[in-house]
Length: 362
Image 1: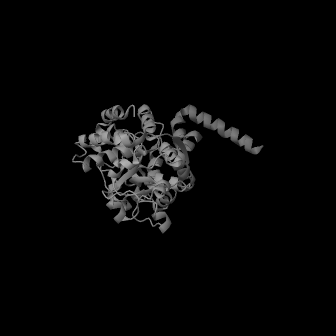
Image 2 (image 1 turned 135 degrees about the vertical axis):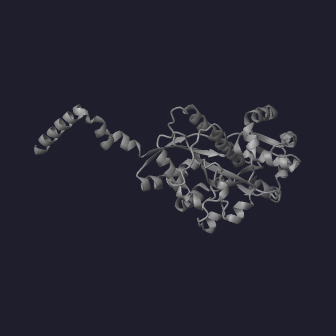
Image 3 (image 1 turned 90 degrees about the vertical axis):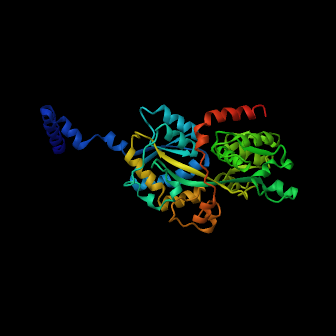
């Protein structure tokens, strides 16, 4: 009872104080419970499927425990996530997004992302240079190698040796059994640039690639958008050969699927996965800490072992089992082709329209 009386007296005194003009002073000193709770919430927009499950089982709970925070996960494809950020530009609701090379470039060009603060993202000093954006916007948090995926069961039954070249996709013996991602999927954008390069063109002269793709159409079983459809076609045996990111192939192979990946003699292609902080993010300080944590040795090891993305932190040490499934170590990582596809990203809308017209009716 004494406590109640004392509390009432305090409330009365506080009311007099507020009436006397102490309103702002009280707010600035105690804040509100809603604000305090909200400051410990981070809204993260990322990919779904196995990648989401792995991140929510490892990196996210470790971050939440360390920082006493709650991460709200918003699921979508890279293009869906970018569309949400665009729609919320004047009133951002998302703090950090999971981007690929294309959506990172597009969002950066539209000034949708914030710069990293080196004072808060302290692990930057241990990250490979290629993983750092030249303008300090976002970070590559893991990498895949883009290579040839093939059906081990079919190859064994046919007595074929594993493919060795990107040009093997054009081999007549695979007619009707090649799967190929559609532009603007990031995998397709990178390989398209490489096809141009191998056939006398370049990323700024793509005509040789267009000509080569016309030749490939008769070999293609399907032009694909969602990676899950690639898995389905390989799983049924309809697909014999295609291309994919290393994480996708190793994850599917881990389910017992008859698939494997090889890096072609012309070179495997580095495929980066980025985390970007949204400009004007509602919890910007916590977002900076989240980026710092995801490139820490602790989180990078989790990302490599569970998400099957190669570490970008040079101090990470993996055992042989984990290292066999990801691009790992300076020698291997630097041997992958680091393609600058900025010219493709700049004209992606028109290129995609031309692509759709080319493959339409296949």
